[in-house]
Length: 146
Ligand code: DQA
Image (tube, rainbow, N blue to C red):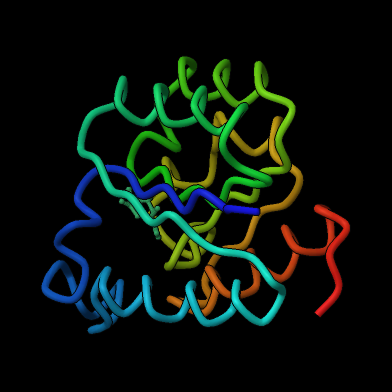
């Protein structure tokens, strides 16, 4: 099975973007970590990034047919997007919301997520390792064993 690892706006800049907040690892580093962790569960990953809300929504719809789970870092859309929430609610695929930073230790506006009520789990503040933990959980939900 394939897990979609979907990344929202500005995450293409990971590694150079506010490194004091998001660390120095790049999205390519995330890809390598995710591939290795998925492989340990007999899964593959499809790691994607878009700065566009509608593209992320199209990918969530695509996951209905093409993925056993979704790992999603929605970036700033976390705090604004009713439409991404509705897309997640519409698909019956296990989903984990990931944030590199601890969104609860930052500005007040980052403490509310439109998406958290419709995902299976939320991981925040573990940096790039959050993606690995999310894949562990997806593997569990997908009924796989290492
Ligand atoms: C983020 C947290 C969001 O608040 C922010 O807008 C991002 C990244 C994170 O990974 O910590 O773009 O999702």
